[in-house]
Image (tube, rainbow, N blue to C red):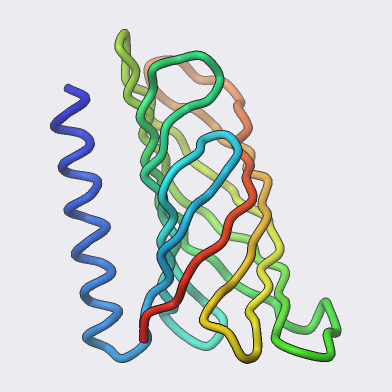
Length: 153
């Protein structure tokens, strides 16, 4: 099941990023380190909204592939910076975790800070994410990470 999950997740991410480029909004591609650790992508859907996703692997000792996608709302008025832009963001999304033993589906509620450099095609972010696992059991979990992305325009 793991190979099929990875292929479907990566094809969905590629389709979304291709759509963002076709609309002229560009997309960011980079890494996220934490739980999970892997490849991060994001594209803007409007001036203050975006979709981020990651294809990543658990670092908690399980052999687990993670895929998540979140709809995010950015508030650029919270932090005042002299260069670039910084936003508090929050949103809702979904997570699929595929381990050797089982597959988990959950609802994510990310909260984070995103800094966009003024003169560089990079952004930095840090987030904490409560996750309500819905299947196979209902329980509360947490994700979190620190990342950097390069923006293609």
